[in-house]
Image (cartoon, rainbow, N blue to C red):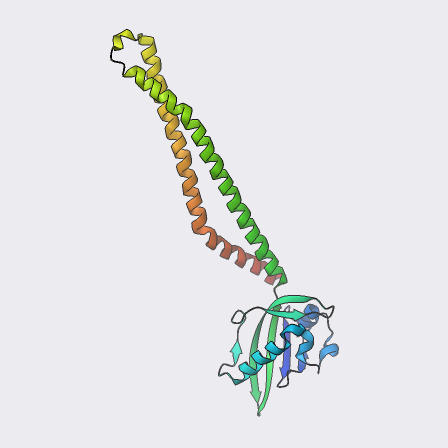
Length: 224
């Protein structure tokens, strides 16, 4: 059998009965190296006891199969001694009183790397958005102070008690300054409103984007 995933069959003593080419590629063993040996050879020593307990518990359960993702993450041990994270599904087969287990195992090292890189990109994006918002807040504050000053002075001129004492040219300039300062104040407010809106949308869709990125990465990996 040729498959990208590891397909392994073990007997009721958890000795390896079948080891496909996918398993050979993932673990680094030839089938002849592991056939007849305990499944423990493919697992880190620190999980041997827990793994036996899981299999024994599964053997007593009513269910005959558990799909990938229904259990917590498991770990495999390659021939060179390196560990790797994996997902595994297991099925129990009973024939004439004899029990065997089939295991399909998938190396998720690359998927985890993609997920980690995606999480780092999301953190960087949030940091960049936060820095941009801080800068906009400072800039808008620094702009508003002189704009407000111009607006107040222009309005004071136009509200003068003795308007006739103010030259017509000054009054016209004051009116232009007042309108321009109001437009500038409105533009600053629009800039802040857009920033807040984009920030809210970013928070709202972050989880959806992470899920989408996860699915895309998984599809790319499965096509390899």
